[in-house]
Image (cartoon, rainbow, N blue to C red):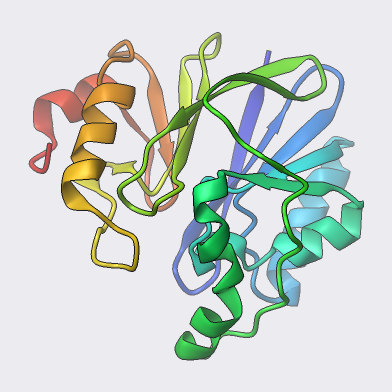
Length: 211
């Protein structure tokens, strides 16, 4: 059984997620910590729970989701994975950070790429990868079927959707991703987005004004 916890960090109020199972093995999703206080908060949670980080996963590589990649990789000696179509976005991180005036430690390169379908990423646990481009070329959602949860990145929010005006964004592609990959899930699946509160598939299907 996979447990989930989040912390909200950086000027963009990004949700960084921790997933772990009964082995104590842990995946860190979108580490966005941008200063020593946020780094300490991340490490404190790991140490408090006695977790063993195994992998970093980026749902996509916009700057607010990768600010802590280098710190986490170096601190715990773990590798990074993301979808190959977001590698150019990852590699543009230094330029984008300078445009926002945000300090940035250059992310490590991924050691592997996420592909659609089931993947055992940590401990005894299997995460399903759904390819959901539109917000960025390589956006993915992480589906935890047994737990009825989705780590949604910046694809679907509480009564909103991800922006598509950034480089590589595509509005129609994003809507197609939501309808084909997320709205086909059962209504009682909880969505944990990259920003803001959680929601559910059923609620968004009924009330989201953008989809």
